[in-house]
Amino acid sequence: MTAAVLKAKINKENISTGIDAKARQKISEGLVEVLASTYTLLVKTHVYHWNVVGPLFLPLHEMTDAQYNDLFSAIDVLAERIRALGLPTPLSFQDFEDRSTIKEETQDRTAEGMVDQLVKDHEKLSRRMREIAKLADDADDLVTADLLTQRLTFHEKAIWMLRATVSS
Image (tube, rainbow, N blue to C red; front, side):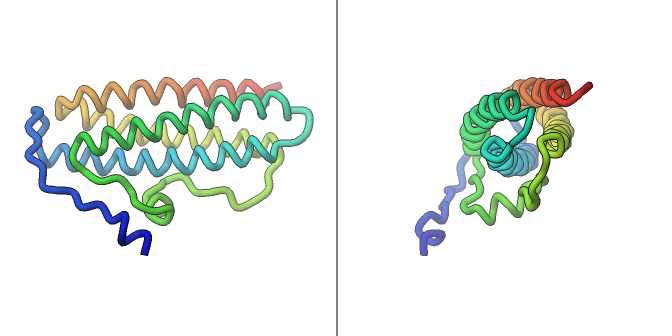
């Protein structure tokens, strides 16, 4: 019932901002994947924030706090960019799960295991964002290319900080 009520009815919009309609569609589809993956990474980061234990508790607890807050803010910006390009965003948790390239957590991990998994997820998302940024740049979608460049800055810093926390 809820899904039916929330079913987005997107009117055929005549968007004429200089980005080809087919490119806009392809870029938007890529952004939906990034949005869903970012949402999954947010949840995973928050779960790790709650469950980390051991000598790395304090630095990881504080770091994941900052990271999930950044990811939460990014979700809104990504969703609004998708809408500005004329496409709907995912409508349900299942929709997010189906479109995410990052999988939800299914096992209990050590602090080091959490860091390893977060690094892999940030790297995976970074690689995909680079592909979409290139597509956006080729289509003269400077806004999306800039947005993804900003997001890459966050993810690469997160990778560095996570690795530095567990290196010996």
